[in-house]
Image (cartoon, rainbow, N blue to C red):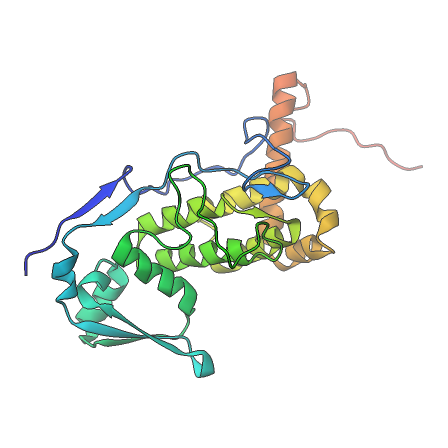
Length: 277
């Protein structure tokens, strides 16, 4: 069977480079309304201005002739069985390795959820997953979801696709899901739920998704923390890396402002401290 052609439009897959966690006046402008990053009555996070690279599959009929593979997702009562064509699954290095090591047509994914895996399969067959990005750059309406994400469910949907794409070695799907995160209008409570997922399911080196989270809270934590019913404090205590990243953003921003003002104290490691009598 001849290999069908695959085309990628919209540029190359993103290359993850070393990025400094820094902010200040060079960061994104904060607005009161709009898409994410919007928090209702709050702040905007960094946005992806460029459209995500697009995966397009040509010659689908040849893929459909390949054997079917059973994907057993989850465990216990929530375990779900999905089916997909083997030739399409081999677009993922993860599945390619599974097939080469065992040759099985049944693969168990006990640590995964069915929803992000379903989005991954939809993406394999169509090059997108619901809700699709429109030509305007917005997401198509989802009748089942509120216009404002007040629980974090919509943010978490795309964040889970992001981490599944990382596991399965699908960089274009990672880029697409990350771009959708920044099109969600949300509340402070939703943002905390999203931040908790990011810091519990990604590595310290994954600045692609962690840096915007730290930037978001670094810009507006002094306001939004009052709307989180103590969840911001709990988040900082539970995930010290989150607290450090937010603090680093705030301190870097202040350092930049001081440098622009020409403060003499910038860069000095010691200063006189008033002592009590």
